[in-house]
Length: 333
Image 1: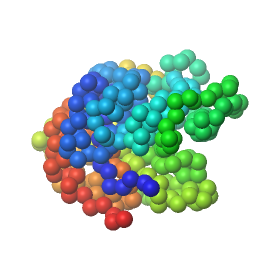
Image 2 (image 1 turned 90 degrees about the vertical axis):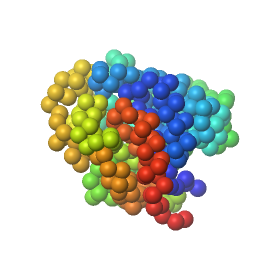
Image 3 (image 1 turned 135 degrees about the vertical axis):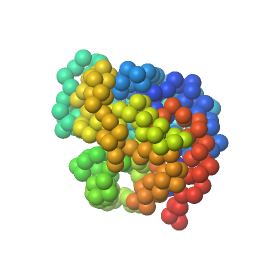
Image 4 (image 1 turned 30 degrees about the vertical axis):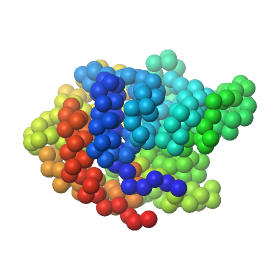
């Protein structure tokens, strides 16, 4: 049975020290947030963002510090991580914190994955790598000895010995129709980001089509969305902190092939407030934030993860806890 009606906190490891993020997650739990989506980066987008801790170490601490559900938003298998290592890490967290961990997977970006020094493939190949990796992870979640020889992923006689009673669900970040259909067919739920309503409806239709192809009920499968917002006490600061702290959010072009934070920093010089329109909600008005979140709830998302791009994390969490989360209208079961 899916969990419905969750506003989640997006813990952005590109921007903040992991100790600070842990404290803010405690505040988020007190304020009515129900889950955490933690980014999995090796580099920040720009050097000025300043951080990029190892999220898998941190999630063990999060499990002890809170009772929140949590997962990665998202981990790319097949480059920095062999899928067998991801399967082992995910199984361990779910064994320690039953029913609380979910595994978010995606195709990855050169920013983080080029560090292993291999050729960075084109998008269709990245998606094929992702699907092979998912198959390997799912087989390992069986607890049996697994061998695998795909076009991209190799596995020699591996078995997970520390296993949860039930494997963690696998949710996949998708932005295109083909991958949405595959996600519905082969995985447990979908993750996407804010986009035009027409595009989102199209993605969900393909997701449902894939689920039905595998004889699954798509209405029982979680639909997650991550939204970037910029909230501050006044409108000018809400706009300026978006440009200052999250310039990558105003870059209206694909970013998966850009390798270095310094390259993003050079591009950031061309970003202005106007570039964030329809990409990041910049507003000091919490009623606008409420309407923004409600819109995606009405589109059918049952887990909405919110990233405030500013440094004012605790103020944002408490403001949402008081003025946004309690006022959202979720569909009745």
